[in-house]
Amino acid sequence: MKTTLYIVLFILINSCASKSNKNEIVYYDIYSSNKTVSGYYRNSYNYLDNNIRLDTVTRFDLSGNITDEIVNKYKISEDTLYLVDSDKIYPYYVISNNCNTLFFEDDEIETCFIRNEDNILVFTEKKIVIDGVKKELKFDLNFILLEEEYLDGYLEYYKIAKRTSVPSVLK
Image (cartoon, rainbow, N blue to C red; front, top):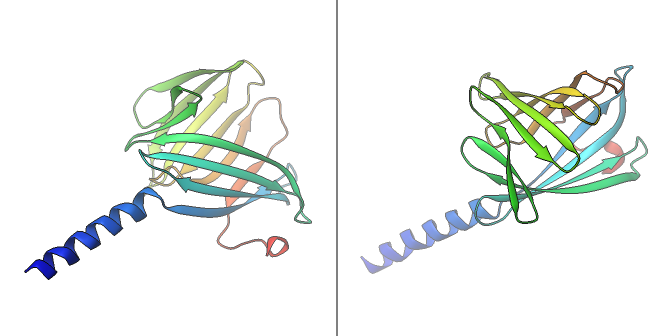
């Protein structure tokens, strides 16, 4: 009986630990205005305690050279991806019938949940103050980006799409 109890406790402890510290690396193609691949993203999703996730986004050119890297910190709940900045937490993408306005740094960002399409969460985002860029974003149920596509504003067309494999120049 004690042995069974220890085994059950061991399994429970290990399954909780693996969920809270799960790490995932996802690669993306970046398409330019002529709809050809112009570079790559690698997003390292690092899960910490208390539903906190650190996203390290690295951009590569077509030769595999790093062009820039940013780190974003998020808190995740069942229906919201919060942006964490220092000691402030902003609701960023919220699954609801209303649009959400985020006042962050020098910009005002409006995010709207559009639909859940076969467990793919579809949002629009518009940067109101700086450049007026509107884009559509698709996430899985864990708020992992699947696709981002430019819709309107003062930039050239672009699209970011999740890959199923590592780009050969990054192997």
